[in-house]
Length: 172
Image (cartoon, rainbow, N blue to C red; front, top):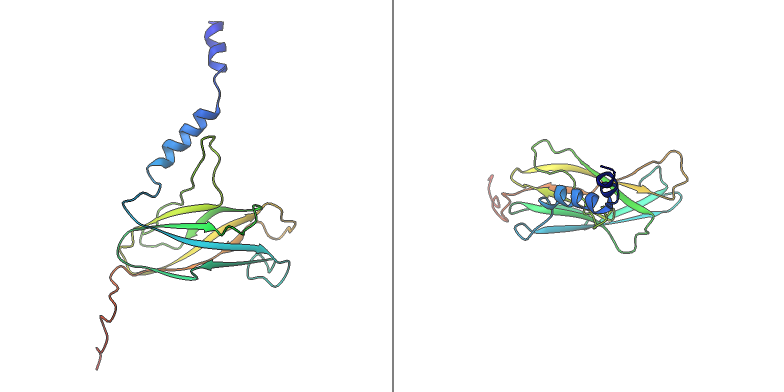
């Protein structure tokens, strides 16, 4: 029996971890069935005068306002290339009352490490609604005791039935 026990303990743990993450996240990754809409996030430490983290940080999104039309879509929030490695996306919270937005999905590498530079959410986009989002970001080099997470809130709306000029001239 000692041989069996020692053989079991000789197996590396990393592939099992990677397989676990791959199985868990494989079915929910963006695919070619639905388009992916990338929204880029810039975050910077400014010390004071910023718009987040008690004024210590500045953030912006590009595009700054998004309205989704025409059915389901994957939303990808990703840091712009210039954003320092010290920042990581921790989570995305929503005010979704109509069950339009799926859970945040992170990608993992073969070793099971989470890619904290981007996150995906599936948007059913079947109900016209304004959904409040907040992308939670952590600064790994923060020296501020009063700022644990930086809340970055993009402006996103769903309007699957929007048709340009549909109501033009009505109401007279």
